[in-house]
Structure formats: C-alpha cells, structure tokens
Length: 437
Image (cartoon, rainbow, N blue to C red):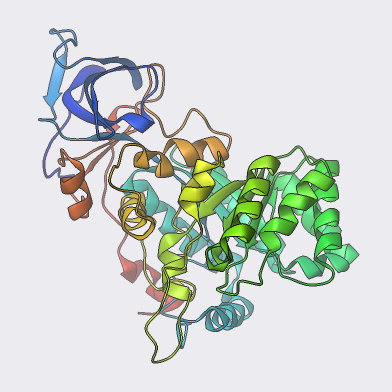
C-alpha cells in the first residue's frame, strides 16, 4: 500500500493532530467554526474515537500524525444506489441517453444476463469500489420483477453477510406499482423482502389507480412492519404529482413507518403555489427526500440535438428549509441510467454542491453525504465524528473547501477502526468475463 500524503501511526493509541473537520458531521465538540469547518485533534484508541479536542490539547505522550490542517471526515453513507444494475454499460448501453432508452436497455440486459453469478460479480466489484472510496453504509434498490426478485435478494443477503464488517447494506424492492395487482407475485415479493430484512419500494406513476395502489402499499407495509422507499416523479412533466399523492396516502393511512422518496424531479417544473403545497405536505407526512444530482442531470431534459434547459433535480433547498430530511446519493453506476460514476461520495458531494448550489456558504453542506443519509437510514452511529464512535474516517490533504472541491481527492487515506485500509480500486478488466471490454 502507498499513501500520497500521510501515513498514520500503526498503533493502538494515536492522535490525528491539527485536523480540519466538517462541523456538520461532528457531535459533542465545540470550536471556532469558519464556513462549516472546525479545527481539532482526534484521539484514537483501540479503533474508537476517544477524544475530539482543541488543537494542541491531545496527550503529548501519544504518537501523532500532523494533518497540517488537512480535512478529516467520517466515512460516508450512500443511501440510494443500484448495485444490481452496476457496470452493465459495456454489455448493454443506452442508445440515446434518455429515460425510455435506459428502461429498455436494462430490461433487455436483465432478461438475458442477470443470473446469480452475474449479479454477484458486478455487485462485489461495486462494493470494493465504494469501500476503497470510504463508504461504510449503502442502501441499494434491487429490480424485483419475477423471477429476478428471488435471485437478486438471495445474492444481496450473501453480500450483506460477506461485507458486514466493512459496509452495512440495506436493500429495497423496486417494481412497478401496477404489478401489485398480481396477488401471488406481490405476496411472494413481500415474503422475500421480510425474510431478507429489506424495504418495500416501487415506482409511482400518475394513473386513476394511483391512490388505491398507494393505499395497498402502505397497508401492506404497516401489516408487515416494512419501511418504504420509492422512486418518484423522475420526469420533467409538471403534471406528474405522485409525490403529493404519496404524502396524502401516508397521512390518510396514518402510516408510522419510515418513508423515503427519491428523485422528485417534476417538483422543480411546477408553479410556486403547487410546489409550496406539496413541500408542506412532505414535511407534514415526515417523508425523507433523496436527490440524485448526477443521474438526474444525465437523464432529464435530454432530447436529440437540443441543449438541456434545466438541471433535472428536485427543490432541495426548499424541502430542507421546510424541515424535510434531505440527502444526496450516487444512484446508478456505469449502467443505462447513468453511463459514469464509481460510487464515490466525494464525487457525488462535489457535483451536488455545483448542481444544487449548496455553496456560499458551505456551512452545513457536508451533512448531505454523512449525517443526513445515515439518520434517514436509521444508523445514527454512522457518518459522524464523535467520542465513542468507531474510528471510521477519511483523511484528506485538502485544507479548505476550495481545495477539497477542486480536485478529486484521489490521495485520500481511509481508516476503518483506526487502521489504514488498502485503497486499491478494482480493475475494470475483472468484469470483462461478464460484461465485455
């Protein structure tokens, strides 16, 4: 292993001194905060954060690594991914980069290739990449049309066990809501999700049956103790208002489980009165919103020969201002829905800052890939720097936001329980046997 800028002590107890921390991801420490950044020494003992102290106040007898004001972040939470689709682009590309093109390309690839061995190979490649970048918590949506739901959830359960000491994994069943009309299929899907400890998901679409579909979904979730994570209004059509319908269904059914809605793109295409009403309902219903800025910019408003006119993302700031839990995530990786990406939350954060204007100031922006997604996923022990927390940290040579956001931070160092991990990324050639070159 090589480290480009620092090599922390290989000791049971040591100090990361003279560090700069994103204040939004720090719990229980008060210091002078300048544009969301605070200086501190971090004491690590036996893999646990034993102290977060003002610079220079760590015990002098401990071994030290001087960060020289370099940043220290907690490991990341990536709350909306598609590990089952990842890396199929070389095998089945999106012919025109559009949403319909993505749907068709994935359908064809799934029906032709998604055996357990194929899904496992690609999923493990993705997890190795995410781990090397510093991620410790991932939620993935799994395409769950029959018979794929049983294949992919079985592979997921195997991967969750194999990776439990490196990345905590959650899974959501993704399926068209209208398929609930097939009672046998839906009962089997719910059984699989319950057996695996997953969540129920789905794709909402405007239709005369939407309210009854949502009632059935939330009644089933309540009866079986499942939380809900939906794909919502991933379109530029301002008439798409399924987010509003979801809020009304949550309130109508008095559903008290956790509900997350991803994408919600059409909200940004609607008039102020409509959006204000929907945002208020989202807050009242307690629904969390995750924006997928890279994928949404790639797919939305794409028409042949025409420059896109809008950014494709939801009303992130307005939702957050209303008290809605909000976060950003990777979404798709090298598949027909997004041709690029590497499950690197630093890239996601950097692009989210630019696309969503999370800057000027950047005082709380760090939360969107750390504390906020971890809290939404029910893991308040992840994505924060706090005394007593596991020393799962990512060290950067960058000292200020301008430095952090201007380069890809490829020289970062990742600590898991206070130990440096091998950050070698898997070679794409490893996938040649399943997806081609």
